[in-house]
Amino acid sequence: MQNQQTKKLTLAAMMTAILIILGVFPGIPLGFIPVPIILQNMGVLLTTELLGAKYGTFSVSLFLALALSGLPVLSGGRGGFAVFLGPTGGYLIAWLFVPAILGTLLYLLKRHNRLSWWLELMTVMIAGVLLIDIIGSVWLSIQSHMSLTTALLSNVAFLPGDMIKATLSVILARRLRKMPALQDIF
Ligand code: BTN
Image (cartoon, rainbow, N blue to C red; front, top):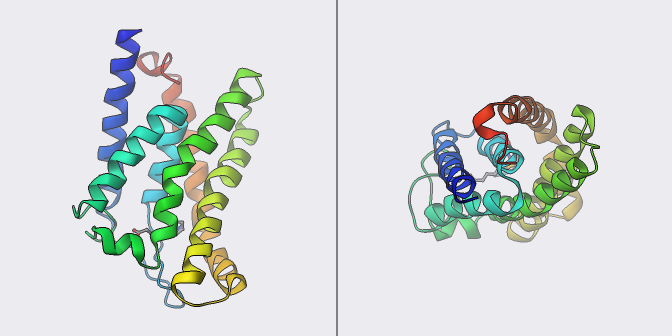
């Protein structure tokens, strides 16, 4: 039990480090909205899949706390309170809730032996990707004074990339979960 907890905490810290590393890749600007294409949302999905609700929330919160405190851990070396109030603040806040919502859904499906590859991907797409994009769009529309419809429609541009990221995170998580060292974690 103690050993399992230590493993989970270690993995949570490792996932926070991976989130930071993914931020080294600069965002790709889209031009028509002040929100870039980034890789860190894939890290949030993977963290949730590997760690579930509780430890996933711990890992993502730690990452966001570092960002909030001003460390340059967000894509392109950004950080600080102002970023949370900027156009991308809604996405960052959404990341905080993904482990609790997606992690709980994945846990329930797994407990009922219903976690096929396809269902896992659909769950990650809906309770991960879409959740982030919708919360992000709501804040973007308020912050940037654009209509919610425009904000939501602009976010469609993220979907192809986000689908690839979701697919990669499911493939990776399913492989990693089979590793003996990680089997009793999720
Ligand atoms: C930040 O670094 O300030 C947060 C950027 C959020 C970008 C969002 S996450 C969901 C969507 N997919 C992307 O690739 N970019 C946006």
